[in-house]
Length: 151
Image (cartoon, rainbow, N blue to C red; front, side):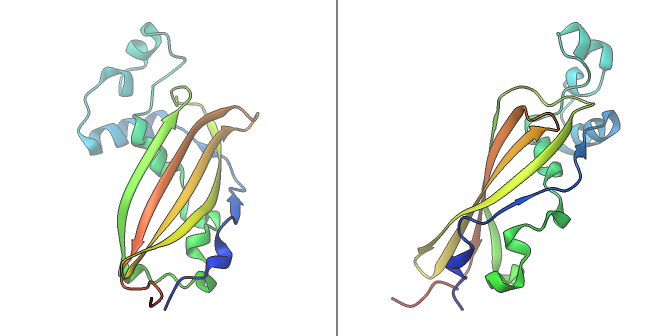
């Protein structure tokens, strides 16, 4: 069954800011196998001119909460996660994310397009501080296998 195109353009904003913590950064760095001292040692991060530990660039995936009310979580969209594969994930950082940041995430279902028998959903994200500073932007592409409308 094709996905509901009426969802394109819908946006959702997190109700609760995402608290970037030192241990969360350290755990993420360990999980991805990155020994960069900026991700693990506060003094090294400060010596490099940062206010606190720096988060690895892909750390922002952890700030996209499942309870955000993402468009992809709404049953009326028609997305069956058993048919989904991850297509792509990209981030543009406007400054490093550091421990102590409080981030608000806004997600928008940017597009749904057919590619053969599949549909590709692109969701865009904006990560801002609670004071409104744009820290990063991102996109995520999901492939819904076999759901494209017949041609």
